[in-house]
Image 1 (cartoon, rainbow, N blue to C red):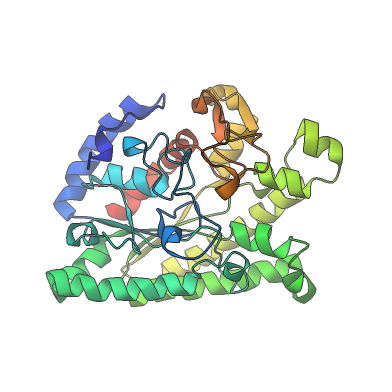
Image 2: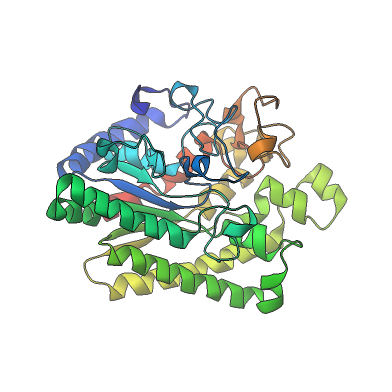
Length: 363
């Protein structure tokens, strides 16, 4: 397979990115670093291809800008943040789905993704679309560790996991698919929004502890994006039809929920970082770079910030964004690829804004 590092990267900062990453690649390769990712559709490299769910993206036009125009199951036109991290670390290939039956022993020691689109931390979120719970992702990581030990030995496996970059992002679906969804009122009847945020943070802490128990020591946890600016959120949660159909402004109460949660999350991560010696547990800012692209699109040469490139861009995603769906001509002008997920260009901007975080945890 053609290495994804040979594929064209359509972003204005590409050459700067490559030059800056050369030194980091040398350092990372000397440390023999890997990357493991956990979470939802922002990191799923194709695990949902192998389960019975509608939340799949292993068909065109998904992947049209990926290596060999391959629809791997990523909810994107091209690469996601774990792919950029892998490139930055000098990995030999892009992250592979853990459930991929073709996963090789070489893939095991390089870059593996455990994420599942449409999942969340709340145990009531994954059943909505029958996807892989976060707890099961952790279980899969334990299985992975056993396979790694069998492949390279216990000491090398411990060093590999301890030195790896662990990238986690989840929570969006807990709010959008679950808490605020009129079809799933259970959590709203149980919790105020603040109580629900605290409930999720308890689950986040448990998950991070589970990673630490398996030997992980370098954890980068991404906060929520601006939930109210996601095109599908504008379509579903706008207070008036005019905004939903025409103006398509961000839904501010959802953005407030995301910002409040991110503040609470940062406090939780700081506490864990200070309490667990020998580990780096850090916050990755998802919200800031995204809201900046939406408020200052000309800065990044974006033209469209409230609709996706696929179809009308206001509701199409997954099976509704398929080979028969018309897509935009120039995806580089779009922040969103479909009605929920970002374009490769947008992901590259988010990564670049947080590159210093990766530098910190690997050094």
